[in-house]
Structure formats: structure tokens, C-alpha cells
Length: 122
Image: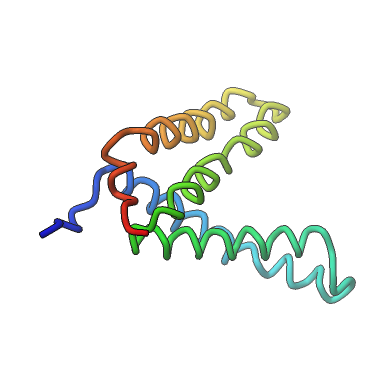
């Protein structure tokens, strides 16, 4: 019998990252809705909905341990990179190191054998 829980630390960190991202999306969704009143279809709104759907779909597939979850998990773990690029132009560019370190650690951890074996169901 295959043990499903506890999950490797990598998966727990990935799920924590995904749930924090989902919470931030929920908190900022009001601004996207306010923009939709002026223009029903906008680049910001479309991007936001794709990000929201991708996050929820990644969480769902990760909990189900499917093989497709690994690719989505890798794409979700690269989301802090654009944030780091924006923070490089902030008054304190040292703040860009946090998102870069998070992305690098998640990508490294997802390439490990324990994480790859976690996504085994077809």
C-alpha cells in the first residue's frame, strides 16, 4: 500500500505558496472587479482569471498526485520571478532577493526525486 501522507516537505511548501498566492488573489480581486465595470474585457482581468484558475487547478492536481501537477507546480513556482524584477526597481532593491530565493528553492526542490515520485498517478 502506498503512503499518501505525510507529503514531502517540498509539496507542503508548494501548497503553502499556492494557498498564500490564492489568498492574495482573493484580497486583490476587488480592484480587478472595479476595472471590469469600465471595460468588461481587459488584459488585466484576463490575466487575473488565468492566474486564479491556474492556481486552483494546480492545488487540485497536487492534492490528487497526478503527473500533470508537476508541470503546473513548476510554472506556479516561477511566479515570484516577475515580482523580483519589479522589486529590483524599488527604492530598496535588496527586497528582490526574497522572491528569487523562493523561486529557486521551489524549482530545486521540485526537481528532487521525492517530489517527482509524489506526482505518480496518471
